[in-house]
Amino acid sequence: MTLSRRRTAALAVAAVILGGVSGCGGSGGGQDKQGGDAQGPSVFSVALTEPDHLTPGNTSSSYSIAVLDAIFDTPVYIDADGKPQMRAAESVTSDDQKVWTIKIKQGQKFSNGEPVTAESFADAWNAAAYGPNGWTNNYYFANIEGYDALNPEKGEPTTDKMSGLQVVDPNTLKVTLTGPFSQFPITLAYIAFVPMPKAAFKDLKAYDQAPIGNGPFMLDGTWEHNQKIAVKKSPDYAGDRKAQSDGVEFKIYASRDTAYTDLRAGKVDLLTTIPPASAPEAKKLLGDRFVATAGGTMDYLGFPMFDKRFANADLHKAISMAIDRQAIVEAVYNGTFKPMASLVAPLVPGYREDACGETCTYDPAKAKQLFDQAGGFSGTLNLYFSNADPSYEQWMTAVANQLKQNLGIQDIKFRKIPASDYLTTLREHKEDGPYRQNWVMDYPSPQNYLEFMWGEGNKMGWESKEFNDLIKQANEAPSIEASLPLYQKAEDLALAEMPLIPLWNWQDQSGYSARLGDVQLTAYSNNLQTITVKNK
Image 1: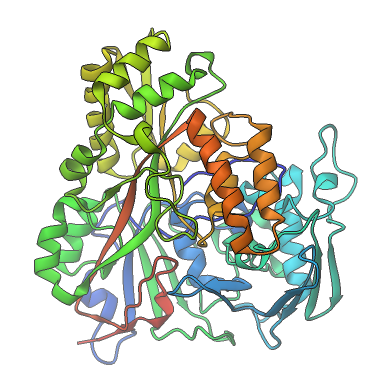
Image 2: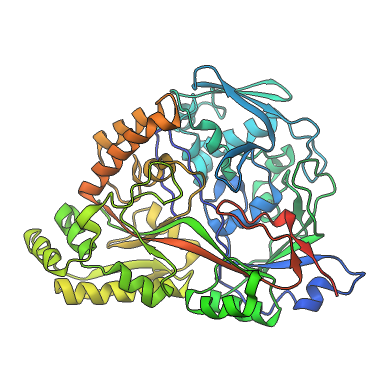
């Protein structure tokens, strides 16, 4: 997933993908260490990639969110059916969709014993929105009144609090937006909207290593970089996600292949991204413990529009039509992923299976014609991707070969970036060629994909006032249903210029050990709190 800074009214999220990067698979103990005997603690392990941060307002990494989802409760969550439900909030209401009242459930506590109040949310949101902090999730608050004052075009802000946040009483937060936004409640499922205790602000650097949350688990020690992050059941938790185990050990891996080997050997209990090449074996080996779910994650190939060599829409379309999506998903993903011809996932209302039309259809002859029409491409074509997963290099290799064969581009080089640095590279526009980007759905709305990835401040450097106006109109529509035709118009406009090419939609394939019970994986959460452990 990728994030971009923008100043328009959009809120989106990256849901959790656990997979492998960094560290050794054997650390943290095998089955005996994790589970112990019948008298031992019920702790299980989850495969993870090294996060970038553990401060909720300062990370968009799905690897970080895997941990944060266990130690924080968001105001709202998305259930298995894709519907918003209350969690830390008692209610989220509005008469005009611009001024919202959030009632906080009483009796909640942070893991250090501090009460969770409306002020806890306001403090966290203001900290994330305060420009000088430089936190990743700053832009999620761009549609709250007073955000601009915390992010002036020039100079330093004169305040560190958004005027649109009003603490009415200990359990009531009033939020005034810059305009109507019918989907505001569902966006509160994103990790950026969790509360933070006052203790956090005494030393934010220390907090990043051992955050204090309001969720079912709490940090057990501090983050052991490139090795593990341990959490344990929080004794002060008073919410509706009571942990059924004593704790979770997030084990950091160098690759999903290593993690899968450890899953087979009983050295890790849960792997939510089984390597596609291993999926058939995993299905036979694990039986009912192999879980395949439709996902909202999609892979894209983006263009650096700030580089004039990539300004021509015909070049984008030529590259799109030169890519054999079906052949790649068969070869790299064992046919488990689905080629995409839309900018939103099939789980999303308003999804159109063939929104892209012929431009997302493999046609080498037409691709070459468009390529020549665009003036071709001279110089080295650098392809960017992260090292988070070996399949990324595999499909980039396939894309490179197809571009050489179908378009005649011979000078192609790979730029493989460490996963922890990849989002920063894209945010700072340091890439000088097409790059792999993926989006992980947080909530089922076209706005979650379109505004966040394509709107003002996007990573491609693409600018379209017409697109932004359509998104604004859709956001201000009286209901989600009324917004869909407007989002579709915006999608059509983006596809016409195609600064970012849709490739395929993920199908999540997970597996877990025989030690675990009550595993309830959904497209929106791994629900680690429901998992029970069978100790021997």
